[in-house]
Image (cartoon, rainbow, N blue to C red; front, side, top):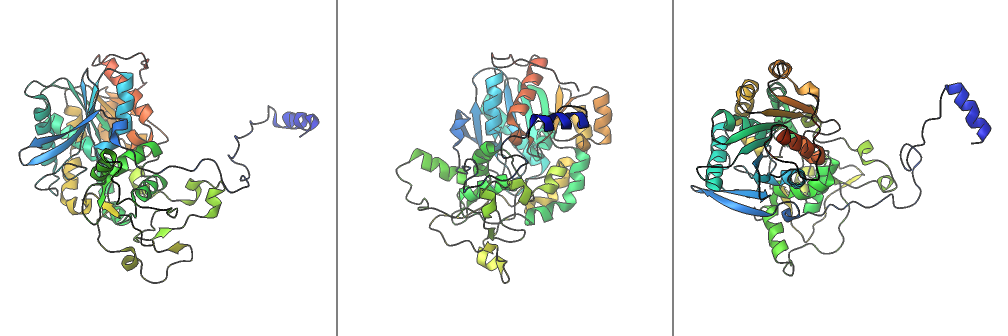
Length: 441
């Protein structure tokens, strides 16, 4: 465009020209085969973020706990339904860098690498009792100051633990994206949501790719470490995290690993174990989000959610797909590797869902410790919480541009919010990497 044309447009628009978009944004597609860098969906081991793990015995049960940090108060993390302690990995690494604290993330009953005599009894009473028992085993009768941090179902359980005074040294309570009203409303559609997700993944990479492309987790780094805790081997029921641990400890003994290049795959259509072949246009620069409808649309619009996980099935993709497949889909070919399914079938625990959330707002407000509510949107507040927030009964922070898995989508922002909360109430001291800025509400 000539200088004369620019001056004419400037006069017509009454101001300067809008800035040019970055290369590849809002303009024509780049020509050529590759667009940017190919994404890596390989699983990541937990020791990139945590320093050690424990299998804590409680009666006949054993609970997996991941930890990092060596001084300061303990941030005790409780994951949502269908997730695992590994969903906190990136956040724990970030927050322990900002303030002097210890992080401990628990695999709740029926999740991750915890082993119990009854994985299907997920009532609020049982889960909260488990948390109290794990704390006693870890820290004895005189535990350090503990701040409970829970997401979704885990946030509800954190409130139940606090209300029942199961942790005598409880110093704070932080609940992430769970509100009684919207949670109860979303339960009516939860079974349909669970049934609409893939039943089988043909590899861990495929599971991680689905997790990111479906929108369940929007942060690839977090998905690579957290998705491992949500699935298990279809043939042996071995958790993927346990399998990855073996491969990590025995790098020269991976004879069961897949060999040779695998096709690039997308997640299965609804109610099908089939997988779509990626369009060539996507590799030439078309946005993934433009063509893919997030599988957790209902989940991200309400804070209800158990993840939350798909019903397990042993049927093959050929049996579930049947006749009439479209030209753009194909049956997953038989591969020398292993298939994976969900670690827990949450659909079988439906009778406990309402018990997690009923009365949650009043229970939260009644907890006599500093409290914070982190939300993905202000529309999640119900009447009781709105009144309580106006009365200054708790601190609230809204983190936009993220889905229901707030702590996974924007771990750095959540880490800053936690660090600010801890330093504001003088629970922990900041490191040289953090300058506290108090939020406005």
